[in-house]
Image (tube, rainbow, N blue to C red; front, side, top):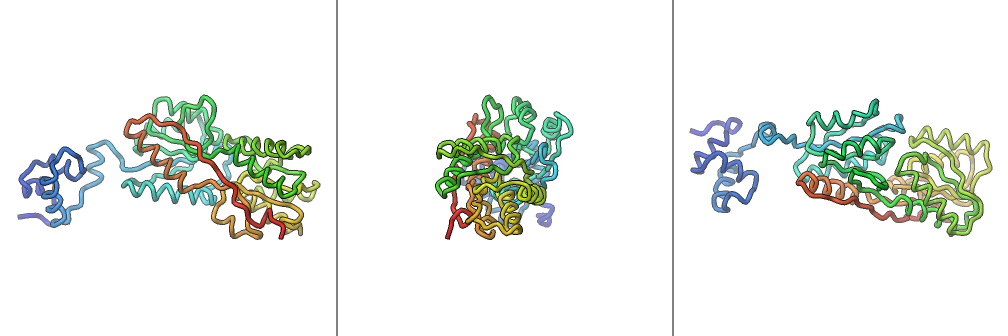
Length: 339
C-alpha cells in the first residue's frame, strides 16, 4: 500500500514502475540515460501520486545548493544601500532569470574589511556560482579569486589584463555620446558630476572629456566629485550651486546623481533645460518621471541580467567564456531639449 503523498519515496515510485531508484532519479533529472518510454511511465506515476522531490536531500547528494549568490561590494561607497534604484532593478531581473533556471538568489551586500572576504565566501559553499555587481575598489580581490574559482561573473568594466570574466557597458562611449549631445544642444561649458574612482565611472568621465574635445569646445570639463547616494550628492550639488558659476551642461555619472541635480537646480530657480541641460546615466524607469523628464544614457539592464546569468551557467558547465561589452544608447528627453 502506498503511503500518504508527503511520505512517498523514490523507492516507492521505482517499485510501481518496475525500475531501480537510480533510474527514477535520472528520469526526474531529464537526462538522456533513460529511454522516453520508461521516462514517460515514471513521470505519469509521479504525476498521479503528486510526488514532490526533497530538494534539500537532492542537493546534499549532488553537493549543489540550488542557489546563486549575488554580491554587491561597497568598498568605495559604504553609504550606498540596496534600495538604490539601480540595484533594485538589476536584482529583479537577475532573480527572474535565475528563477527560470530553477535557482534561488542569495543576496549579500558586503563592506570589505580585509582582502580575504571573497575567498571566505566562496569557500563557505553557500552557492553554486557567484555574480558580483560592480567592482568598487575590489578589482585585485576579485581577480585573485577568479584565478581559481571559475563559476563567477562580474557586472562591471572590462579592464586591461583582468582575470575575472565581466559583462558591462562601454562606459567610455556612454560618456562620449552624452557630451556630444550636450555640445549639439549648444552647450559650451560642460561639467561631470560623479566619483571618477570606481572602474565603471572613470571611463564615463574620460568619454565625456573626449566628447567635449571632439566637439571643439575649448573649456575643459569641470569635475564635481559627488557621492553616488541621492542625499549626499544633492547636498554637494547645492553647495556647488551657491559657490560657483554654473556650467550650461551636466553629464552625471548616474541617474541618481542627475535626479539630485534636477532637484537642486529646481529649488534654486535655475531652469532646466534653458539655463542648464542635464544628462543622466543608466536610464532607469524613474528617469521618464522626473521634472523635466531626464535625458539619459541607457544601459539595457534586462539584457545585461540575461547575459550575466547565461555566462555564469556556461562557466558552471565548464565552458571558457569571454567578457562581454554591451553598447549603451542615448535616450533624449526634456532635460536637454528647449521647447
